[in-house]
Length: 462
View (tube, helix red, strand yellow):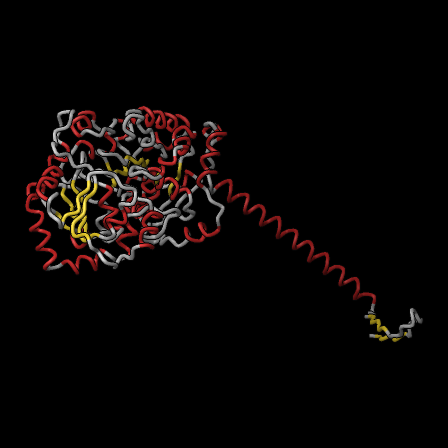
């Protein structure tokens, strides 16, 4: 090694020195060896890159089976809109969805059909579609679409197939209620579409396909029980899994299908807003509360008895009782009344279930369930007997005495159980899915039905 020190020429009156180092090889042979080493290293790197490329290409071709192009031609321009509406680029959504406990869900995978927008997202032009009591069909779709842990875009690795059809958003221009007369034809059209363009329905006869029927009598699609029972569940849905708000503990044609009882939809944002103004453990100055339809004469113009006369008895017996705050007219801010109440009456209407059930639990008011034989949502997550009261329909005239007895004995224990955050979370649909929330409970219920999954059964038989 030689160091050469040179004196630089004068430039702009600045002086200085620079040092240049040279590494001189004494033997020319060393230079040749170095070149050979460089060539070998370059060859090794090239070989490594080629090997890795071949590995990844083979993985794509042999491990992940793509849906044949002949099976993916269904209204492509419209289905892209559906995915764009629901997939969020918000990084916080992605982070939250990764917090789901995959072990409890048994690594469940759900494929969502990308249907033409007329089946779902076109209905969202009416804002009410995603906020009314039947809106769980929208909420579950959105939550699953944003769940990176559970959703799969490869149908061949799916355990279940979610069919997103909104049938509750056709609001009547007469009374404003959802008109569901079109439900059967719309769902039939969707099934025809997926069965003729994809292989997955036909291979299992729809047993691993999931639908939402968040109406009075589930997949019977009618608000009147007699008519609903007469029509029954459409034949093409009888082998599938129905997520439905309707459930009873006795035989009923409207639950004569594999089903999961889900809560009616209540906006989690509205609950959070109310609890910000009125703390859960704050003063409750209303002893017993109900706001809703209470007919003085229960037999309406159709000749049917609304609420099996239960609400009429409540009104006649307790409307003059100062302990009971009973209101028959709508009020936009009625959640502020619930959060101030000790007991919230949840009598049946046309159907056994009611959105008051969820609102009462979410806002810390002890639900008083008056609906004989009702089957409640997610009993493994929500211990209903520890957070609510059940009163037989025949005993409603003695309601005041029953509530007095509870208030004098175990009210504080019931409230302590009721006010736990896990109970409230289990009945609310969040977007994205949160561990323990209503959509997570749906997924947990599906994970217990993996024997209906074509993929799971096939793998277990191999």
